[in-house]
View 1: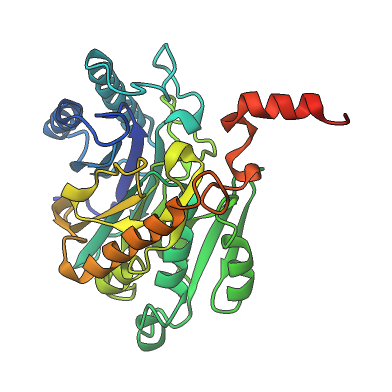
View 2: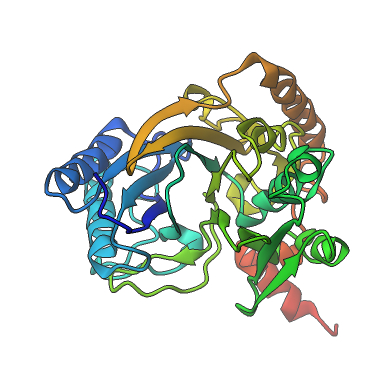
Length: 370
């Protein structure tokens, strides 16, 4: 049983520890290492429950506990778990093994190279607490902006916005500016146009959390900050974003949350984090992006929380009703690939950055003014 009157915290970490083969998937030994570490932690009572998932070569850890947010003991456990996975990846000579981890193993370095990121939700568990862990690969944080808008602000997607009294007052979206680290909040429906003006620029502005206006109850949270072994948090951008969404009873239903992924919307990332393509919702076993290292994939792992225990997961996209979405994503992929290295398939230069084209960028600077 959970501690009396103590809130539950759900912690999610995603990381690149090494790809098999190339950037396609995660090796079973890496997943087993994470499971063993977290199983031992659960047996010792350090955490309440856990689950290890992967999407493509991204590793996702879902943990429930009663430490509260930003707990150093938990962060040390997670950091040590990931470093154990990196060690296995290096032994197997997996692609980019430990690329986002420092040589000393004390802190992550360049987040674009795969440094782990974290998000946490702290709340009082309801009599029935369904929660969905969405995990994407070969894309960016901004990939969640459109689905989150549809789930929590669009009545054409979410009928509960006009039919559920607890939702009728809308939700507040917190936005992070990836360029300067500033944060701003928009309350819907009154500020929906301002929200769209900002979150539509997915390469710079990302939705990091959503709260219900009636009581400030947390509804969703996105991995948007770096995990460090000392417990510190810093802004980070990622190619394997994850998020948690609570559902039902005053919040969007499970079906409304899933409906937002039926459009195969265009996202940034894909090949070398420099191309745009459709986000394809797939069952766990199809989360193996291989064509041009893509197209980008997303999985949905559904859990029912029971006194902090994670009952599940249920594979939310293992459903033939998403077959047409997957077929559409393949058609979009065919069309986008015909553009080769031309925009809009390739991201605009200010999005990919000169770092993706160091030799060419250097030559361009040399020739300026001639």
